[in-house]
Amino acid sequence: GAGVSQSPSNKVTEKGKDVELRCDPISGHTALYWYRQSLGQGLEFLIYFQGNSAPDKSGLPSDRFSAERTGGSVSTLTIQRTQQEDSAVYLCASSLPSGAINEQFFGPGTRLTVL
Amino acid sequence: GNSVTQMEGPVTLSEEAFLTINCTYTATGYPSLFWYVQYPGEGLQLLLKATKADDKGSNKGFEATYRKETTSFHLEKGSVQVSDSAVYFCALREISSGSARQLTFGSGTQLTVLP
Picture (cartoon, rainbow over the protein chains, first blue to last red):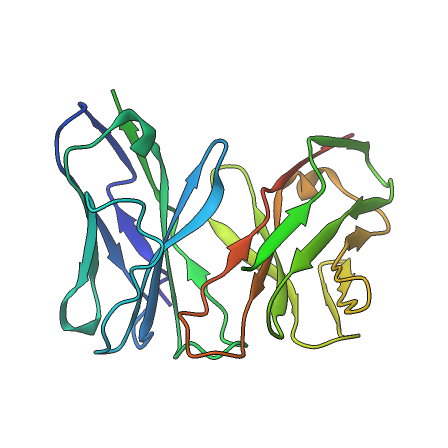
Protein backbone atom coordinates (compact mmCIF):
# COMPACT_ATOMS: atom_id res chain seq x y z
CA GLY A 1 0.00 0.00 0.00
CA ALA A 2 0.96 3.64 -0.26
CA GLY A 3 3.21 5.07 2.40
CA VAL A 4 3.42 8.58 3.75
CA SER A 5 3.97 11.07 0.96
CA GLN A 6 5.28 14.61 1.19
CA SER A 7 5.47 17.43 -1.29
CA PRO A 8 7.43 19.13 -2.58
CA SER A 9 10.52 17.00 -2.20
CA ASN A 10 12.72 20.08 -2.45
CA LYS A 11 11.92 23.74 -1.89
CA VAL A 12 14.24 26.68 -2.34
CA THR A 13 12.96 30.03 -1.18
CA GLU A 14 14.20 33.48 -0.38
CA LYS A 15 14.46 34.80 3.13
CA GLY A 16 11.22 36.44 4.20
CA LYS A 17 8.94 34.41 1.95
CA ASP A 18 6.23 32.06 3.22
CA VAL A 19 6.30 28.33 2.41
CA GLU A 20 3.80 25.50 2.68
CA LEU A 21 4.80 21.87 3.04
CA ARG A 22 2.30 19.09 2.55
CA CYS A 23 1.95 15.64 4.08
CA ASP A 24 -0.38 12.83 3.04
CA PRO A 25 -0.45 10.21 5.79
CA ILE A 26 -1.19 6.54 5.39
CA SER A 27 -4.94 5.98 5.02
CA GLY A 28 -6.53 5.16 8.37
CA HIS A 29 -3.70 6.60 10.44
CA THR A 30 -5.20 9.01 12.92
CA ALA A 31 -1.95 10.25 14.44
CA LEU A 32 0.28 12.60 12.44
CA TYR A 33 3.61 14.12 13.46
CA TRP A 34 5.92 16.73 11.99
CA TYR A 35 9.65 16.64 12.74
CA ARG A 36 12.58 18.73 11.56
CA GLN A 37 16.02 17.33 10.74
CA SER A 38 18.74 19.94 10.64
CA LEU A 39 22.49 20.06 10.99
CA GLY A 40 23.47 20.74 14.57
CA GLN A 41 19.97 20.12 15.93
CA GLY A 42 19.33 16.55 14.88
CA LEU A 43 15.72 15.39 14.65
CA GLU A 44 13.27 17.60 16.53
CA PHE A 45 9.58 17.14 17.15
CA LEU A 46 7.43 20.04 15.93
CA ILE A 47 3.73 19.26 16.19
CA TYR A 48 1.30 16.35 16.66
CA PHE A 49 -2.27 15.75 15.54
CA GLN A 50 -4.51 12.99 16.87
CA GLY A 51 -7.93 12.67 15.33
CA ASN A 52 -10.10 15.69 16.06
CA SER A 53 -8.27 16.65 19.24
CA ALA A 54 -6.46 19.96 19.57
CA PRO A 55 -2.91 19.58 18.22
CA ASP A 56 0.11 19.47 20.48
CA LYS A 57 2.20 22.42 19.29
CA SER A 58 4.81 22.20 22.01
CA GLY A 59 7.68 21.63 19.59
CA LEU A 60 7.09 24.56 17.26
CA PRO A 61 10.19 26.82 17.46
CA SER A 62 8.41 30.13 16.91
CA ASP A 63 5.06 31.66 16.03
CA ARG A 64 6.15 31.78 12.40
CA PHE A 65 5.42 28.06 12.29
CA SER A 66 1.89 26.69 12.09
CA ALA A 67 0.21 23.56 10.86
CA GLU A 68 -3.25 22.33 10.13
CA ARG A 69 -4.81 19.04 9.33
CA THR A 70 -7.95 19.03 7.25
CA GLY A 71 -10.53 16.30 7.55
CA GLY A 72 -8.24 14.25 9.72
CA SER A 73 -6.05 13.41 6.77
CA VAL A 74 -3.77 15.75 4.82
CA SER A 75 -1.62 18.15 6.83
CA THR A 76 0.08 21.38 5.81
CA LEU A 77 3.01 22.91 7.68
CA THR A 78 3.36 26.64 7.02
CA ILE A 79 6.44 28.71 7.76
CA GLN A 80 5.96 32.44 7.49
CA ARG A 81 8.73 34.96 6.86
CA THR A 82 11.31 32.21 6.44
CA GLN A 83 14.77 32.65 7.92
CA GLN A 84 18.02 30.93 6.95
CA GLU A 85 17.95 28.91 10.17
CA ASP A 86 14.70 27.31 8.93
CA SER A 87 16.71 25.41 6.32
CA ALA A 88 16.27 21.73 7.14
CA VAL A 89 14.54 18.54 6.07
CA TYR A 90 10.95 18.50 7.31
CA LEU A 91 9.67 15.02 8.00
CA CYS A 92 6.11 13.87 8.44
CA ALA A 93 5.12 10.62 10.14
CA SER A 94 1.81 8.90 10.75
CA SER A 95 0.64 6.06 12.92
CA LEU A 96 -2.43 4.33 14.22
CA PRO A 97 -3.74 5.92 17.47
CA SER A 98 -0.68 6.87 19.41
CA GLY A 99 -0.19 3.88 21.63
CA ALA A 100 3.39 3.25 22.44
CA ILE A 101 3.76 0.19 20.25
CA ASN A 102 2.22 1.73 17.15
CA GLU A 103 5.02 2.33 14.69
CA GLN A 104 5.45 5.76 13.21
CA PHE A 105 5.89 5.58 9.45
CA PHE A 106 7.93 8.40 7.98
CA GLY A 107 7.65 10.14 4.67
CA PRO A 108 10.69 10.96 2.49
CA GLY A 109 10.80 14.53 3.73
CA THR A 110 10.86 17.98 2.18
CA ARG A 111 14.27 19.60 1.95
CA LEU A 112 13.83 23.34 2.54
CA THR A 113 16.61 25.74 1.63
CA VAL A 114 16.24 29.39 2.58
CA LEU A 115 18.64 31.65 0.72
CA GLY B 1 12.77 16.03 30.14
CA ASN B 2 13.62 13.13 27.90
CA SER B 3 16.87 12.85 26.00
CA VAL B 4 18.87 10.34 23.99
CA THR B 5 22.64 10.33 23.69
CA GLN B 6 24.26 8.19 21.06
CA MET B 7 27.75 7.52 19.89
CA GLU B 8 29.22 10.22 17.72
CA GLY B 9 30.10 9.27 14.21
CA PRO B 10 31.10 8.76 11.60
CA VAL B 11 31.93 5.08 12.01
CA THR B 12 33.83 3.30 9.25
CA LEU B 13 34.16 -0.48 9.27
CA SER B 14 35.30 -3.19 6.94
CA GLU B 15 32.79 -5.73 5.69
CA GLU B 16 32.14 -8.56 8.19
CA ALA B 17 33.37 -6.48 11.13
CA PHE B 18 31.45 -6.32 14.42
CA LEU B 19 29.35 -3.21 14.99
CA THR B 20 28.34 -1.51 18.20
CA ILE B 21 26.63 1.86 18.33
CA ASN B 22 26.12 3.04 21.89
CA CYS B 23 22.89 4.67 23.01
CA THR B 24 21.88 5.87 26.47
CA TYR B 25 18.72 7.65 27.48
CA THR B 26 17.13 9.81 30.15
CA ALA B 27 13.39 9.56 30.68
CA THR B 28 10.93 10.55 33.36
CA GLY B 29 8.63 7.58 32.84
CA TYR B 30 8.75 4.19 31.18
CA PRO B 31 9.78 4.64 27.57
CA SER B 32 9.76 2.36 24.61
CA LEU B 33 13.07 2.35 22.77
CA PHE B 34 13.73 2.27 19.05
CA TRP B 35 16.45 2.20 16.45
CA TYR B 36 15.65 3.88 13.14
CA VAL B 37 17.78 3.69 10.00
CA GLN B 38 18.05 6.17 7.15
CA TYR B 39 19.60 4.76 4.00
CA PRO B 40 21.07 7.21 1.47
CA GLY B 41 18.29 9.06 -0.31
CA GLU B 42 15.54 7.33 1.64
CA GLY B 43 13.26 8.14 4.55
CA LEU B 44 13.55 6.97 8.13
CA GLN B 45 12.63 3.34 8.69
CA LEU B 46 12.07 1.49 11.92
CA LEU B 47 14.85 -1.07 12.38
CA LEU B 48 13.90 -2.56 15.74
CA LYS B 49 12.21 -1.75 19.01
CA ALA B 50 11.83 -2.85 22.63
CA THR B 51 8.98 -1.84 24.90
CA LYS B 52 10.12 -2.95 28.35
CA ALA B 53 13.20 -3.72 30.39
CA ASP B 54 15.24 -6.75 29.26
CA ASP B 55 13.38 -6.96 25.94
CA LYS B 56 15.62 -7.60 22.96
CA GLY B 57 14.69 -6.13 19.62
CA SER B 58 16.13 -7.72 16.50
CA ASN B 59 15.89 -7.32 12.75
CA LYS B 60 18.16 -7.91 9.74
CA GLY B 61 20.90 -9.28 11.99
CA PHE B 62 20.85 -6.21 14.24
CA GLU B 63 20.06 -6.53 17.94
CA ALA B 64 19.57 -4.20 20.88
CA THR B 65 18.63 -5.00 24.48
CA TYR B 66 16.67 -2.62 26.72
CA ARG B 67 18.84 -2.23 29.84
CA LYS B 68 16.98 -0.29 32.48
CA GLU B 69 19.79 -0.53 35.04
CA THR B 70 22.23 1.21 32.71
CA THR B 71 19.55 3.18 30.76
CA SER B 72 21.05 1.88 27.54
CA PHE B 73 19.94 0.42 24.23
CA HIS B 74 23.13 -0.30 22.32
CA LEU B 75 22.84 -1.49 18.72
CA GLU B 76 24.96 -4.46 17.65
CA LYS B 77 25.54 -6.55 14.57
CA GLY B 78 27.97 -9.42 14.34
CA SER B 79 28.98 -9.01 10.70
CA VAL B 80 28.19 -5.83 8.81
CA GLN B 81 27.69 -5.59 5.07
CA VAL B 82 28.25 -2.76 2.62
CA SER B 83 24.47 -2.47 2.35
CA ASP B 84 24.29 -1.54 6.05
CA SER B 85 25.88 1.82 5.28
CA ALA B 86 23.36 4.35 6.56
CA VAL B 87 22.61 6.76 9.40
CA TYR B 88 21.30 5.11 12.55
CA PHE B 89 19.12 6.93 15.08
CA CYS B 90 18.32 5.81 18.59
CA ALA B 91 14.98 7.08 19.88
CA LEU B 92 12.59 6.82 22.78
CA ARG B 93 8.90 7.32 23.24
CA GLU B 94 7.12 7.82 26.55
CA ILE B 95 4.12 5.65 27.33
CA SER B 96 3.15 6.92 30.74
CA SER B 97 1.29 10.13 30.02
CA GLY B 98 -1.36 11.59 27.81
CA SER B 99 1.22 13.57 25.90
CA ALA B 100 1.86 13.47 22.19
CA ARG B 101 4.12 10.46 22.55
CA GLN B 102 6.43 11.88 19.99
CA LEU B 103 9.78 10.27 19.38
CA THR B 104 12.84 11.84 20.99
CA PHE B 105 15.87 11.11 18.82
CA GLY B 106 19.59 10.90 19.32
CA SER B 107 21.85 12.84 16.99
CA GLY B 108 22.39 9.96 14.59
CA THR B 109 25.48 7.91 13.75
CA GLN B 110 26.75 7.67 10.20
CA LEU B 111 28.00 4.15 9.40
CA THR B 112 30.08 3.42 6.34
CA VAL B 113 31.01 -0.17 5.55
CA LEU B 114 33.88 -0.69 3.12
CA PRO B 115 34.18 -3.79 0.91
